[in-house]
Image 1 (cartoon, rainbow, N blue to C red):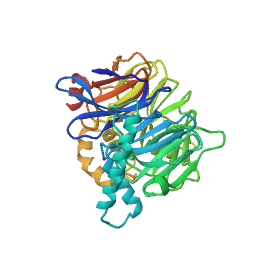
Image 2: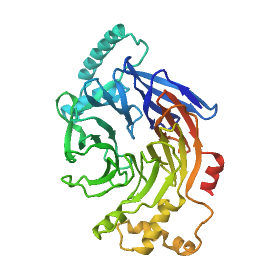
Image 3: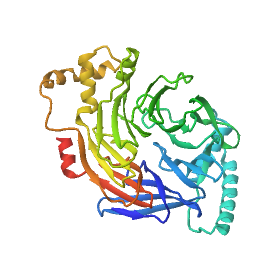
Image 4: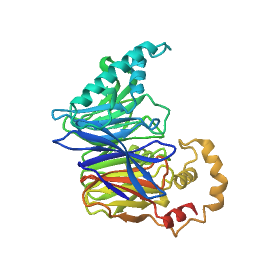
Length: 425
C-alpha cells in the first residue's frame, strides 16, 4: 500500500507505538516550507493514512526517532547556509520538562507556576505563528535540544536502540564522530559534547553506525573504507578494513542480535557481511580482511541497509535503482555464528552463560546442517519509480517495513507469507 506526498523525500523512520504501525517521514523541498508526516498503516484494511503533519521550515536530510518515545525525534536539516540538527517533541509538555532538567538535573522542584507561565507564553507564540503562517493547519514542533553546528555536512544522528544509555546520541559529520549528552545541556538548549574523534585531513565521513549490543563500538564509512572506533579511546581508530568495497561505501548496518556482525553497501552495487572481531584478530596476525558473505542483485548504488530487529537472517536494502530488496542469510544468523565460534574458540568474548545454554543443542545438531536454505535474494519490491533512499522495519510488527522514494512515494510492504512460514518452521 502506498501514499504520495507532495514534496520530495529522502528519509523516514519507524515510530515506537504499542498499538499501531506508525512511520515518520521528512520532506525535502528547496522552495517551500517543509513538513514532518506521521503516517499510520492499518493491516486490516491495508490502508495508509496521515496521522498528523507538522511544520518544519528547512529541508530534512535525515530523521531519527527516539526508541523510547513516539513523540521525540531528531532531524538533520539544511538552513541554506549550514547543516543543523535538533531533537524535537510533538508535545509541548516535553519542552517544559526538558527546560526543568536543564535548570536542575538532580533535584525535584515544584514548577507548576513556571510551567503555567511557559504554557501561556507558548500558546501566545503559537497563536501568533499560526496567524502569520501561510501553512495554516500544520501542527507545531517543539525544540528540546540542539546539536552545535558541525564543521561540515552532518549525515546523521543516532540513538543506541538496545542499550540503557538513553541520555546520549552520536552524530556523524564530514570530519568528526561526536558523542553528545542530552541531559547536561549548555545554554539555549545546546547539547554538551562528551567526546569527539576526528578523521584525517583529506578524509570525509559519508555514513556511520552504532553497535546496539556494544555501545562502545562505532563504524564509519570513509570513501571505500570501513573504519572501526572504540568510544573509550577516540584518539585513533581501532582498525580499518581498507577497500571494503570497490567503490564508495554508503551505508552501514549492525546486527542487533550480534556483538560483532555488520553489513555494508556501496556504489559497487554489493552488500557485504563482516565479523569485526574475526577481522580484528586477523589484522593483528597480518591477515587480509575477508567478508563473510557478498550479495549482488542491485543494478545501481546501495543506499541503505536494515537488519530485521527480530529475525536477523533477514536484511532489507534500498537502492537508486528504484527497488527494495529482501535478502535471507541463514548461514549468518547470529545463533549459528555463535555456536560455530564456541566450537572453534571456547575462550572467546561472548557471554559464557549464553554458550552453555546452546551446547546440548549444538552437539545434537552439529552434523545436521540445513542445506536446503541458501543465502540470497528472497524478493524484489518494485513499487517505486524513483531512487529509494530510506527504509525502516516497523518497531511494532517486525514483518512489516516501509520505504520512501525521492518523488515522495511512501510504501508499506510485508514479508511474504511463504517466506515468513519458512523462517518460523
